[in-house]
Amino acid sequence: MRLPILKDVGWAIIDYIKYGRPVSDSPYIFLRHLAPIAPFSDEDHLYQIIVKYMRLAKLPISGKRKVGMHSLRHTLATTLMENEIPIEDIAGILGQQNTESTPTYLKSSLNLLRECALSPEVE
Image (cartoon, rainbow, N blue to C red; front, top):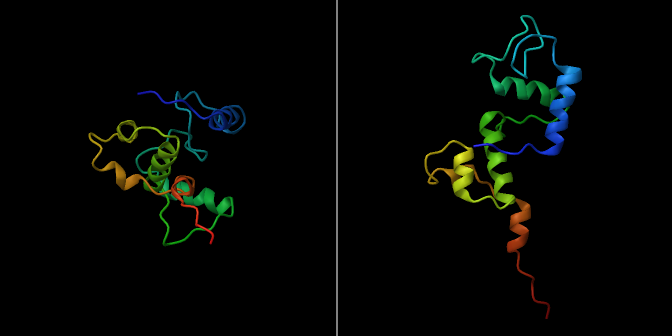
C-alpha cells in the first residue's frame, strides 16, 4: 500500500536530505548523526529519539503522557479518521489484519466532537 506524503513532510524530508543528512553512501535516508554514521538499528529506541527532540524543542514531557511509536500510531489513526478515511483502510495502514483492534488507536478529536455538538435551545 502506498500513501501520499503531506506537502510539509515532503519539504521537510527534502530539506533534511539537502542540509541535514550526514554525508554517506548509505541508501537509507535517515542516518545516525554520531559516529558510526549508519542507518538506525533495532537498538536505537524511537522513544529516546522523540524525547531528545521534544527537549530540544522545549516541549513539555510528562510521565503521564506516552511518546514514541505507540503515540505516533494514535496520532496517525486519529488524523486519518479526521480525514474521513474508512476504518478498513486505517487498519491496513496500521498493519492490522482486521478492524477489531483499530478503535484502540482512534482518539476523539475536537474537530469530530464539534460536528456532534447540539445547539442549546435558548428560551
